[in-house]
Amino acid sequence: MARLQDAETPYAVNAHGKMKNIAVLGATGSIGRSAAAVIAANPTRFRLYAAAARRSADELVRQCTLLNLAVAALTDEAAARETARKFPAGIKMLSGEDSLVEISTLPEVDIVLCAVTGIAGLRAVIAALRAGKRVALASKEVMVMAGDIVNAIPTGEIVPVDSEHSGVFQCLAGRPKSEISRVMLTASGGAFRNWSKERIAEATVADALNHPVWDMGVKVTIDSATLMNKALELIEARHLFELRPDQLQPVIHPQSVVHALVELCDGSVIAQLANPDMKLAIQYALSYPERYGTRPAGTLDLTKVGSLEFYAPDEERFPALAVGRMAMERGGAAPAVLNAANEAAVESFARGAIRLPKIWELVAEALERCGKIDDGTLESRFAADAAARRYVMEHLG
Image 1 (tube, rainbow, N blue to C red):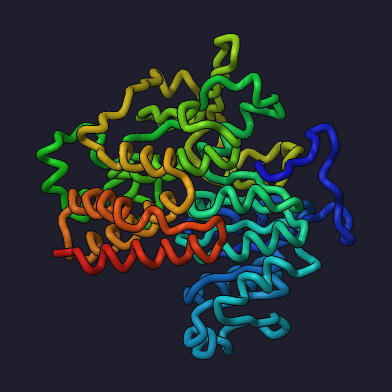
Image 2: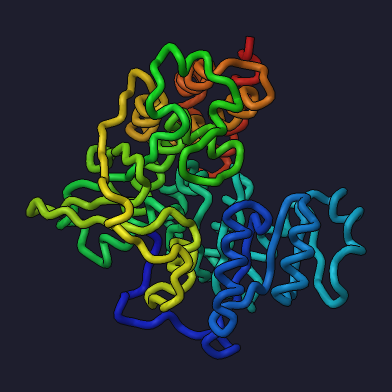
């Protein structure tokens, strides 16, 4: 994992005292709104200094007004021009894709929370790390596409925000890699957990969006239904915690109370449990290595939960797991191809252009056709990404 400080050493305070200045990329999505709630609940500890969105100006204006932002950005330049008058006086406004990098490297910013979907946040995360920032990472695509490149950056640090990776991070608590035998990431099973293979093949977009536990965006919810989300998370975990593919295992856990389990070399298993609320992982990523008494996910009452169930995932019903494992084992540009092909295929499914099984068929085909475009550079990963998207769009029929 990118350079985390010794847990015994408190995170250095900035020039403003103990308050940490936060920049949020993807401020108007579900993670961004949860981050704003966490920051608002800890006004003496955090300030939302800067925030960026694509085109959702109204929510960004609300955050600027309530949380006293200094800098705001809309990466969609047309939206920025049309809505500039809505923002409070005194806010520095930025626009365009480069604004993500600009916000991420502001000298006043201590922590960059990246919650931008897709590849848009990759350059910003790399810039933040090179500037010595902490990155609270909620965008799995960053490590999926370029985890090896990111881990080679000698400055900055990453603390994961995804509930499963946050759970692993908390379970490890600075343990040496030699003690880690296996890491298990839990999955709710998504909308199709109890569906037959035949029924899944006929699923509609509305079916895929009917998630039993989490409130997420369209793309992530569909990925959860196909279990592609878990395949991507396994690849992310490989790089975050510098593990071998054979040390990673997905586990279906319908209650979504246990977020991760770590098996140690002596057979002991440590688990992280909490109510399913992303605000807990967000708060910990901002406060680490400290823990605050505020309880953004409430108090977990296991007597009300009753039972905790665990199942092995069925790869025949959910082929995305096998395709993801293949990409993880191949490494290089293969995970970037997996991610890009899946994004393009999911978008096509969401607008009704293809049926659900076509998603993993296209992803597997793209992996075979485009997965070898790599010379270890960021540019080659972007080239692989573009090639995979082209392949999918050319083979929808």
